[in-house]
Length: 427
Image (cartoon, rainbow, N blue to C red; front, top):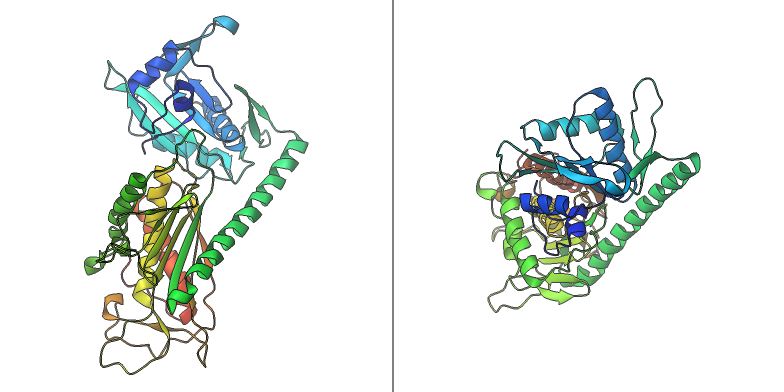
């Protein structure tokens, strides 16, 4: 995965978000960039037990101390004030990323989510270069690493360019901070979800609503997103979304969003793409927040055929699957735009007009959702309220991971109606 923003970008004064080049590494060496709490240089990549433990310690320490980046292929010579960076490119083997991830999987607990790995080829040797490991500011801190030699695990932290183990008091504070972050995340997600419900509830009879919150913060130095960024993110997310659907269901509901986002309060707002060019109330709605939050809502009232006489209020099963995959795709792409790598917590649910006499919602199946005929199936049962459900999306999720999360989101809604099968999403 290409790393487009990191502590090394900031140290070099690079303002634009872009992938680092070999010339940037050379510039860092020439400028003798100092190691910081979020920047560590390693002249070689070894596979002995001591080196594995040291790598696990350094990466766990960064995850515990605001995140950072480890650069392999840049060494150091000299001591004290005479210490200089040196160019020591390493062999770029296909297994390098897998080996780094395996070390962390075996030696760090809890597992660090959202780690990014990138390679830069050396200017004069195509078989050598630099390995970059970007470590997120982990919301699961404190992380412990296995020290080996029967020593108990320890939770490291960065102190300038040094790595130290946390004291008991520091561990106590780290756990307290973790629980506080989790509580704040849950409250922020609930606030965004219910706020969307309040804004849209009166404009359609049934809404499928999904909201995602990043598990981390936008790095300092990342500029505010412009209209072009929002537009391109929706276009790219539409392509990603189509990949998670099978056969004729490859169309994305994101295609219904307008191509001219409107400026909101620290966010971009997108509504239905109408023939008049104006956003429409009671139609697809999305928000792309500057902090990485994504909101997506879709009017999901069942679409009846002319010969249907059943007028019970029902949600369309196909739309549930559609919004589940769309929120995942849009979150992945918007997080890439905002240089977020730690993943997200996604909440999905539905709201409907409960003013009718029975005040219940049914599930409706159309042929497009895999049913043999359009109807409210006899085996489904109504609900008085669709319970919102949260699912974690890991950072830098590939197609398989995106599809798995989309399925889990859709099932969390459909199962409440007694329906157990996914029809359009790739499994």
